[in-house]
Amino acid sequence: MSQRLLIDNVRVRYGEAVALDGVSLDVSAGAVVAVVGPSGCGKSTLLRCIAGLEPLASGRVELGGRDLAGVPTHERDLGLMFQDHALFPHLSVSANVSFGLSMQGRSAAEQRARSEELLDLVGLGGFGDRSVGSLSGGEAQRVALARALAPSPGLLMLDEPLGSLDRVLREQLTADLRRLVRELGITALHVTHDQAEAFALADHIVVLREGRIEQQGPPEALWRSPVNRFVAEFLGHPNLWRFGGAFVLAPITTISVAADGEIIATVEDREFAEGQHRLIGRVDEAPDTDLVGQRIVFRSDVGPAIGDRVGLHLSAPPRALEGMSPGDTSES
Ligand code: ADP
Ligand code: MG
Image 1: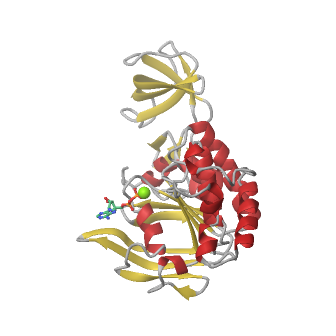
Image 2: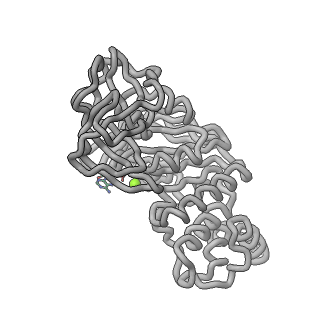
Image 3: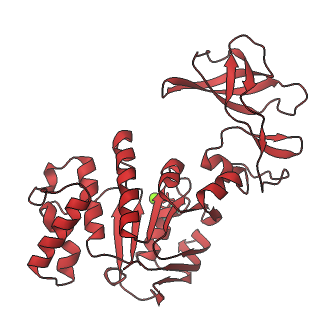
């Protein structure tokens, strides 16, 4: 049964280093929460301490109203899934899925039925007798998900579960995961460094930075009102400028190759993605603004070279971001 997760002022240390510093989080039963942040910010540590794999220096973790202090990992009512799916190589697919159930002492018939049910659910009906070694990467991750879900845990925790897959598989599995967690109504904590994955899956997003929660809230609210430059850039706002005493978000600009436009910039970097050139420039001229010297990101069907000067037009007027103070200097 889905449970509410309550994390209260948790601190975790590795020797002198503080990996989590006063983290509090309230995840209601059935909610899907994404924890995002750059590598090393403490995402895995958060999951590990909820699982009882790292001791708390202080604070409290409760699941379904039960304080988890002193409760061993296997009695915490959790389903865990990690990037390296860590299936048991000597067991069949079916035995992997029902592993948690056999630990709970369920009958062989029960294990078989539940395993078939879960494999159907993750789109692997009929795979039960296969050996783990015969699975593709995407299939193995589906088996790992079925295994995590089989005992109907109160909380499902996923640590970058799609990180090792290629993009197409990742998008497919993201969609399946979204359908699954909604259908099952399971409480889920999903860790990822990929903001797009977080937006695709979560009802609530938590942005971690150096062991602290920088901001949390519903995806739309975070996107509309990032509290600072770090959050805005991490969520993927490309053009964030100080403009007339406010932080503004400039929509992707259109480009003319001739060096005329509202903004003149020099191309500093380029990549080709989804049929278009994505370019990063530095603003040289922008009359009546304070944009000179700032970074600008834009897309173009034509690909100017690095070092070219280009003229840019805004495709819509810049929009002020709510909530971000123009005095905010915190950089990423
Ligand atoms: P993330 O999952 O966001 O990449 P982690 O939770 O793995 O971050 O790590 C947070 C910080 O704690 C990092 O600085 C990392 O180097 C450090 N850390 C993680 N695990 C250990 C450990 N077992 N011993 C010492 N330091 C660790
Ligand atoms: Mg990690």
